[in-house]
Length: 75
Image (cartoon, rainbow, N blue to C red):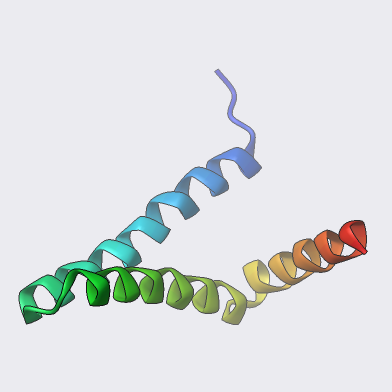
C-alpha cells in the first residue's frame, strides 16, 4: 500500500499538535490550576505548535501559501 506523502505529513502534524496541547495541559494539571486555565493552556500549546511550523522554512512557507489561498478563496 502506497501512502501519499501529503497525507503522511498531515497525520504526523495532527499527532504533533496533540503532543504540544497535551504537554501544556499536563503542566497545568500538575500546577493545580482551574479547568478553565487547563483549556486555555491546551489552546496555547496548539498555537505554539503552529508558530513552530511557521518558523521552519520548508513547512512555514507552504503553510503561509495555504493560508493565503484560503483567504483568496473566501474573499
